Image (cartoon, rainbow, N blue to C red; front, side, top):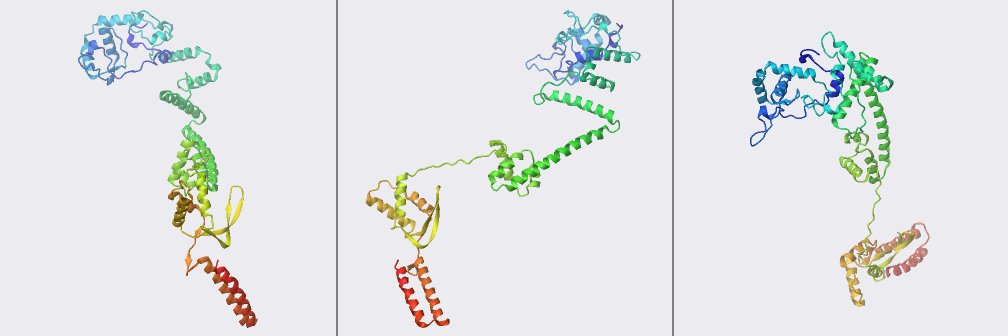
Length: 449
């Protein structure tokens, strides 16, 4: 052992194992209350440390209080001033005593007299300092200490027999720290600090490998690899977007288009979707994303039919029988309509109402009062039923119903044609008079209908 403990150091192997916990765990000042007077008074405030504790100040605290404060711990500005006044008062005998303690102390000593024994060291297997005689980083022993530490590190396990060990040998040849642990936790569950550690290590390994492949163009090679991967992904994405756009254009109903749009609405921005579907609006894009959140990606929604029958069937049948009777409607002599039912189609003649809806409702209410029909439908319900019916209302034209007037005009046109045939085409006046007489006979019967 050297005479001065100031020249002592620790090998890289033990520094990696024992130095993991030597980080500042708190930002407050770590000087004990016996020297700093922190935590006293009514408020009991411990100020924050703005700098790290030096080695000499750590020795001073150990000598004064018997408490070991590791170098690098937080120390406030006030305590730094106090340490400057306390430091020169340390006698040389105390330093000699401290050197003697450091010479005899080892990391395997479990005795309570060792002031450097912490809780963390009690659980970490260590190697006595006597087994590593050449750990001084003097100019003549730097390379020897590095070779010894690297050799002892890789001799602990047959690392060269595994791919990880071979990779560590390659990294050691390139002056890169080895891979000591493997990530077993799933990436989604790992903490942010763990992710940053493995990202940093992966970046080191990748760039060291690229420097072996292309020593002068490692950055360009890495960029080319990323761009090629992005190009392949873009080609695949374009093909998928083109297919989905074709499905969107071929869909005839908005509900189908909404389902197709919800497949990729959350993966592609609105501006990108506009390039493929120019007529899309922000509203439809947002509705598709809302459909994705509520029902799922491309989920089909079957419309729910809510049938509410608030009108008793017997009252409805009573009113329908009244409005379809001969006193309310009248069949037209021409035209027909097709009534589509759930089973088949029925052709019915055109009908016309003799009165306006308000008069029909008044007649029905009077009819119910005369016949003693109890609790008929309300007036608003009767109006809605009449609106659903397809029959038109009868109107008058020149004192006659318009369909009668149209029928009489047709007979007049036929009389004009017969008269022209007898005069122009020389069929004879007698023939034309006879035909006109025959036409006037059914005309009077049609007008009386």
